View 1 (cartoon, rainbow over the protein chains, first blue to last red):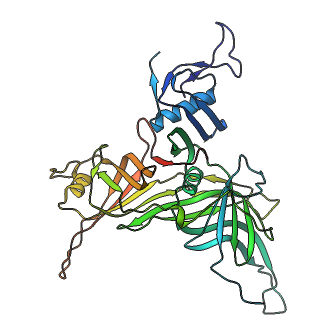
View 2 (cartoon, rainbow over the protein chains, first blue to last red):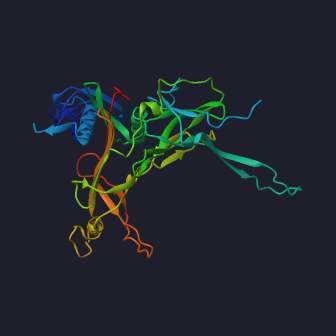
View 3 (spheres, each protein chain N blue to C red):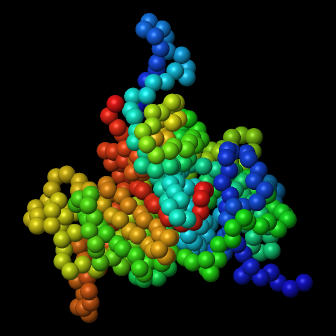
Length: 76
Length: 327
């Protein structure tokens, strides 16, 4: 999983804290829907261009697009 | 009253957003080539108690598992929903013109669906179902055949006649092998055109039925390890693909110590805007050396490919292009 907890130095990360590690380049407008073991049902629409995931479920959805060949991981 | 007509039968499918959702009507429906539009497997045993009669004293009902088990043609609209239910993840891009491109890949879990049945005069529903087994096969230039087994957690009988949003008919077209392209390489991730005669893409989700004490009905379903497979029968000009499996290369002469991974890409074309492509880049093929025969005839090789997890990307990618905006 390419995610990590965010938070100020010394703070214990809270549930829901999320900082993207990867950025993605999405080829064209894409709607992704998948059943993920931990997150349950994930559905998200991404528009063509560079995307930074805002949540763990978005990160998973974007990773699925990479697997499908519809997006690529872009170096930050 | 006349007897019941066997020909009058169809199946409807609808995706559920979650377990327990009661779907009123199916999204897609279609006729079947054969099989059961509804099944209810009863597990029952004799009560083994002594008696003053030699007859069985009674029965214990242990489990009842609803489901459906049938074969059908691969219709371009409903196939997308069935692929999603079998694999678990989908994405859609487009439209380009009026064409949407759907990509189906494996997810960590499977969606629930409702299977509507009409057969033997009964309108039925299997709820909280999942695809247990999905097999898409073809022979020579003929039409694709899809064999589906679904298991569910509950069933409803005596329903009013149901109507699907879309009823797939032969008139709307079906996928055939003729006009397609068939590629494979037993030892690299770049498949090349091969003389394929038949094939079968298999998704055996190997559902395990979860049972609790309060009911004979399944409480839930969960997929086991999935041995995704692609079987391809080729009529080769030489034994290169077989040699690759044994030695690792077409010109190899000795057994290799490491497993050899290959690839395939099969594409079925209905028209300029409708096609289906199944591809994988990490496939462990197995193949027997052909038997000799005094009566003669060409050699066929039957390659059985086990699709494995690649370093990056999807295990298998199924791309369906059609005019359906979303599944």
